[in-house]
Length: 226
Image (cartoon, rainbow, N blue to C red; front, side, top):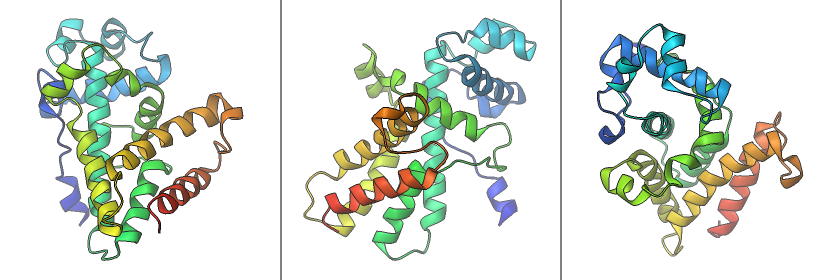
């Protein structure tokens, strides 16, 4: 099974890159180091010049893969959601109970992330911190409609649809499954951010990951009437 998983590739929306970084060692190195540098500096202070200096290459090389740091961030966020979907599919395989599958989905959305050795060039712990702090910047732009038509957010929408389908399975009469799931996804991010930086806005402690899972599980199941 471990050998099988080692061959899995995370599919990322094609429009968020110029050249697929997963097809070359240089591309994977760009992804690896960009995650660490964005996590360290924040998106505003991050530049391709700083990344090029860090990995010993040229800015032109990075621009062959991504036309801007916004596109690079879009790639990283897309990779994250595709990875979460991979985890969800694997974790819920052969589980018949829809309620149990929904609990697993909520746990994956809001629980603690650990390094996945199947993808050695990605620090998933650092990437989740980027998603929490920076992901809204991918779609809160003037270009959001154009980006949406080009498929920038397909990974995120695909993950949410998969979870929304579980909600429909549990309660076909519930009218707002997509709204609920996207709300839970964003709430998971904001509550993590608040626990770190604005603690008076949350009852969730940064060092108690189970609190967020418990809060969102209670909210979802009470909302759908189960």
